[in-house]
Image (tube, rainbow, N blue to C red; front, side, top):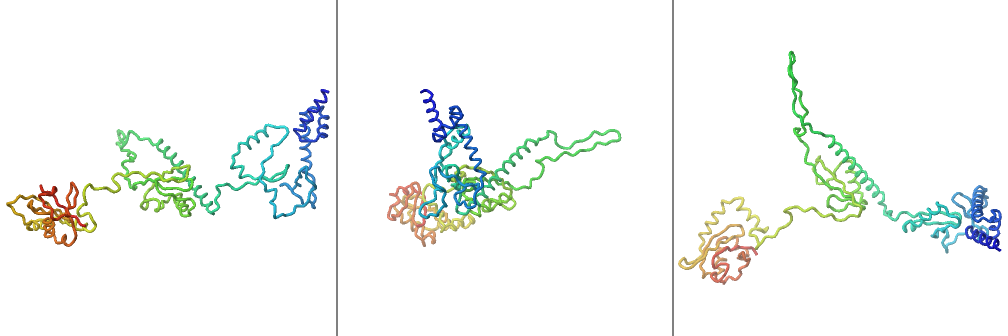
Length: 427
């Protein structure tokens, strides 16, 4: 009874490993003295020999069934009927294009098969999605989908060429850096410079041996070297902190070709003809992003404290420049303004008010405290006829205020009761 139980267990183990029926299992176990390991090895060796023998069998010319990649007839599944010619069908898709998961092999496992299984498990989901398999149990066909990042817009060749040029530029930059470092290490400054003299003797005069010219004494005729940076991105390149130049644009690829030939495109670099240019390559492992621009001292716009600057508008710019370029005519204007009467009473309390015109001219005047702001308007109109032909307003600074009430008494106005400056501003 014990032997029967052991044989039944051996049969069950053999069938589990080989998927063979009980008759074949009994034959192999009986041949191998009921040793399960020897029987399984013998079974797979025979299977391998049978497959090799079938590979050399001649194929009939009348055979129209499925074939493997080497031209042999494809083996049919065990539960299938006799081979029949394939018929085209438009209603159902072909089973060879079906996406199936590879079936895990049964039987004895070797180190190679274990490694293959580990590689399959470690493969990424993207690779599994891009690999399609078709075929039967003993034959198959692997269909590899094009890469996901392949471009279908016809510009893939341009992008590949641009990336190739950038790789060559990076390699050339590395080699140039090594050469500069080597040259700097080899260059040694001699402590003894200048001319040398030999010692003379009887019948031999002293002679001078000229020394090598120093680098500092050699005249420098080269222009100032301009330095720029080329930033390489996954989708293009940029110059310094400028915009992106995509690899898909043929014009940008042409500019890269010029840089590779040692030419500087004027549209990228602000250089003069024959001016040397030093390029530094910076590689980024990401898509383009706007780089921070370098800050420049004393650049941009500024804000002035106080009111409008007299003479700063475009309409009066020419009038503001005239006194600066020709200051001599300004004196007669001021002296003529002194002759304009402000109609004030010298016996009454008065204050000094200096009027500043939009042209930059300054007119000193005196007014009684009983006079009004309107008297200042009248004084300005009489002093400069060009001001009277245009609307203006009297303003003061600290604080900035427009005095539009011409009936206001100067003695009651905080800005003028102790004197001050009245600025004429255009409206």
